[in-house]
Each structure stands twice: as C-alpha cells, then as structure tokens.
Length: 229
Ligand SMILES: NC(=O)c1ccc[n+]([C@@H]2O[C@H](COP(=O)([O-])OP(=O)(O)OC[C@H]3O[C@@H](n4cnc5c(N)ncnc54)[C@H](OP(=O)(O)O)[C@@H]3O)[C@@H](O)[C@H]2O)c1
Image (cartoon, rainbow, N blue to C red):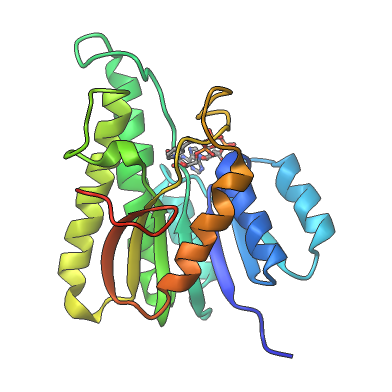
C-alpha cells in the first residue's frame, strides 16, 4: 500500500478549514490540522480518522506558536501546506469609520500571520509539494468594486506578500497558490452566500492536488482559473 501524503492545514477548527481537513482525510492524506483552541469539529473528525488526523495548536498572530509548530515538524517532509486562517471584521465600514484595532487585527491575521507560517514551514515542503493560502476574489485590486473594502485590502496585502515571497525564491520554489474559494456559507460567508461548502472545498483540494510539481506562484479560483491581481 502506498504511504499517505502529508499536509498541514492551519486554521482548521471550523468552516472551510475544518472541511479541508475532512476532505484530505477522506482522500487518505495524513493531516496535521491546527486550531487555536478546542474544536469539537476536529475532535469528531479525529474519532473518524484516528490514524490520519493529528491536532496541533497554532494562533497565527502568535509567532511563538508558529515557531513551536515549525520546531515540531523539523524532521518531517510535507507534501502540502494550506494556510486557511482568516477573519473579517467591520466589513461594511470605511477607513474613517473603522476601529483601528479591527483593521490591524485583519491585517495581522489575514496577511502577516499566513506569511509567517509559510516562511517558518517552507523548508519542510517537498520540492514537488504545494503551499496554498486561502485568499479571496475580493483580494483582486483589478476587480475591486468597493465591496467589503477593509477585508479586501487585507487579502490584497496577503497577495502582495506572497508575490514578494515568490520573487525571493526565484525559480527554485515549489508550487505556490493563492486560492479563492468562492462565496461560501460559513460563519464568515453568512447564510446568503451562493455556495455550500461541498460546492467549494472539493474543487479547492482538486486544484491543490493538480498544482503539485508546477513551480511558481498563481492566484486562482476554485476551478484553477487565473484571477487578475
Ligand atoms: N466563506 C467565504 O465566503 C470566504 C470567501 C473567500 C475567502 N474566505 C477565506 O477562507 C478562510 C476561511 O474562512 P471561513 O469562511 O471558513 O471563516 P470562519 O468560518 O470564520 O472560520 C475562520 C477560521 O479561521 C480560524 N482563525 C481565525 N483567526 C485565527 C488565528 N489568529 N489563528 C488561527 N486560526 C484562526 C478560525 O479559528 P477559531 O475557531 O479559533 O476562530 C476558523 O477556524 C479565511 O481565510 C477567509 O478569509 C472565505
């Protein structure tokens, strides 16, 4: 029997991250799923997949917890890393109205934190492996309509940081993807979102699997179509 591939999913307590962990387990991957606190969803998943799912603690705004995970995985080779953690605060407000802390929290969680995870775990990713980060269609500057502008700016900042990271790696990098899942019914997406989780996450995982061995950075949607920066 062939050995399971290994992935770390960061921010897997609920919503899209939990669904990613479940989808990878269902595809027989070994999944190291992180949450920043107790997650009933992950606990239940571990009961279903005791030999495939490990749970670790990471808060992406706490660099010590990122470094602790990196130390723990020092001798492990990963086929994929998926950084999913993200927040949306004050989505309808403008720069003049928003509480500064809410804006800074989004920048820290959606842009700085994911890139710190990528940098800290980069040496663990196999050459033919994939690093994926959950971005958003709203992170596209070219397609901006002003909708959820503060959240959108944090995802645009994420995209820029990933672009800069990719430029630093040159043509030596593994596959790097910023992926937009569509508008999905989760706590963040809300009940009016156009997609159910099952209409998004299996496609997202297909794109990540198909990206193995393709070096360089792409900003894509759940169907693998290139999105404008
Ligand atoms: N739903 C959509 O329509 C949509 C569309 C485009 C992009 N996205 C992106 O997809 C990702 C997941 O969104 P979702 O819809 O599943 O949202 P969600 O239901 O609110 O879940 C957010 C997840 O991120 C985790 N998280 C938040 N801050 C964290 C931190 N500092 N450290 C570690 N984990 C943290 C949460 O953990 P806790 O349980 O500890 O809070 C939770 O697991 C986000 O990056 C979001 O921006 C979502």
